[in-house]
Image (tube, rainbow, N blue to C red; front, top):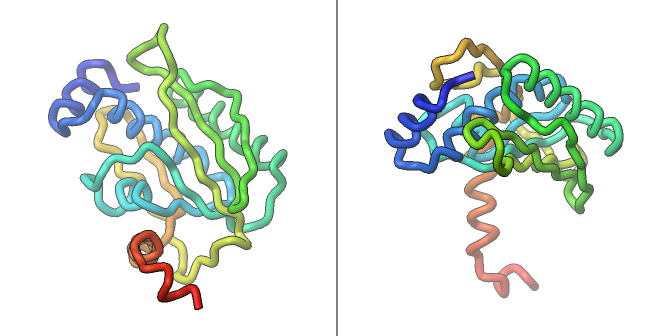
Length: 185
């Protein structure tokens, strides 16, 4: 695990709070172990983690499942991934993952502490879309996780192709900004 000095230095260099660096660091360890769950990373974090290392920081990890899965099975897989990430990295991760179902799939929060060992936990949100709610159009890729930290880390994750992430970002922007009356015919 990286030390407090490195976290503070990265926060200063990136002009972000220390908790942002902690979250970014922990996301890598969690991603490494989530690769055993049959889901694909997408969104802005996908861009940052495998394509453009200096892209914006993100609080959440967004995925699309590649198969239908029960809430109970997903909960078991996520809990196993968190335990494995905790054991390998030494990060104080809360091992109790509580999944919630929603209209698009599942959400959960992963809590951890690095700097503030006695205080409150920092959160990473996971948003997991059901396989039948989103069609992946381009072939998925397995890519090395970009890890700009000094510890001994090697990990891969399954991710949308860059072009598909960008297309999704454009579609989402269009959906948020389009005039509704033109399409509500």
